[in-house]
Length: 409
Image 1 (cartoon, rainbow, N blue to C red):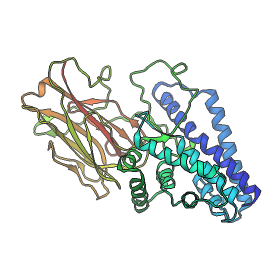
Image 2: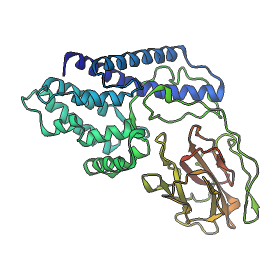
Image 3: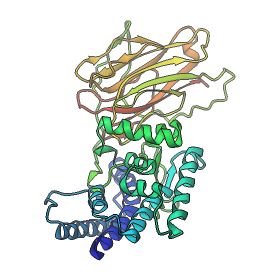
Image 4: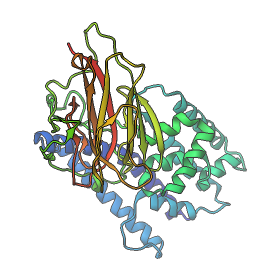
């Protein structure tokens, strides 16, 4: 690799450390703008302009060095792959620099919900060991370091799944996921597919000291996985049709207005808590099972739910539930009793909305609450007891759901 290529690699590494934080803060600021009319902070706009300028400059330099690069816009991942291909086997120092830049990105990973996620700790231990090997400056690079540089190491597969999921076809995804599972365990692969593993961000603009006052109708999305700011989409609120279908003669009240106060699953009632088994079929990932209050699905990976089934577990005497879904190209499904699947996995027909209601003699003593992550909209407000959650006829996929039951106060 020539000195110019080394400079490009260093610039690319610098940009890679910036885009995750910038994308996250842009997503949050977009929600503030669309939900409450709060403009983007000036500092964030300035940083976005600087990032665009640096990114465009890097693209121009890469094209100047390699005439085979087309004028079409390239992502950081594209540029990294091209630079990686130009690394010569004998260029040990540049190989080490490239490997260290990859390991820095691995070590910046965090679990969104758990500060100490044991499978991720094993990943970081592996990355630290490789860092030590490289720092020892031995004449010959170890096989593991060479595998990392060539993209064959499980850590390379892990980074690809987290940073560029939209660039991976179904077959390649399965191969990468199996490689990560074999080395670091299935729980880590599941966490990655659910969008739980992200690059660490330290966002000065949107801290508790500078954020606007709490707004019960304001929804802040999780970490985005898109690689560039131009992927951030701001959409207005979606009006849901008010015409309710009928479940066994009982009208379900539709609409996605938030419940007053966004009720919490916790309760002071003397009634026993209710457990659930929520099984979802995720496009390309297959069936996954979750419990009450757990988020079932993915975020920002373009993977729709194709089917789901819900059951009370363990059973509560006198309490049951049923549900329906709006399925692309098919419309509203019939009312489906608990424990039975609604939807058709593997047929390319996505869930676009759903409704759940309680049945049985004990139904009046409980309420069921649920929400969803919807394409281009994000996390929608919590719905309850038969309210429709999602959209109809807009082609917007449901990517994940969260369901729980709580006794009425």
